[in-house]
Length: 178
Image 1 (cartoon, helix red, strand yellow):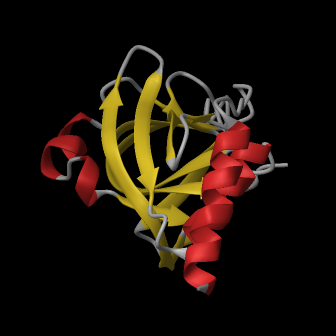
Image 2 (cartoon, rainbow, N blue to C red):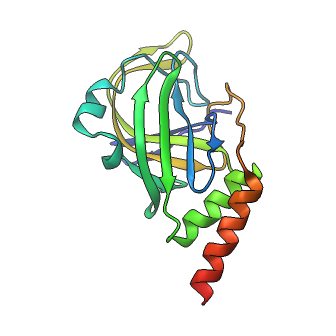
């Protein structure tokens, strides 16, 4: 089944189960996109597709959202860069935001582990025979932590000190109740 979420004609959102690693506290990293792999909507991201966008809009300016909801920012991206595999990201969830604390707990548990890009395709090439679209240049708007990713090519792994993270989340929750 091919599924793609589109918000109007400008913004496309594709989801990638990224190698999402809990780094302890509220930091995590992973791959928001993988090169040369068709997602469930038939989109394939070409190496270099993000280059211009990342110059214009570096990491702190690309929004970190929960499930692509513009009204639910949950943290900031500290690193976004292309490498040989895809779009590597590292971010920090905002412990002062309730939804971010929930996301951190779900990542640590392994219940939430997908990353998804919200973008506008600037240049793309269609392959009607394969029913794919190769994205040659992307204007990256946001990267979300999501439940159901479109790209199932990589295994999602939550690692780190889950018990320490859980304790920190309980402490943070107690501070808000006090």
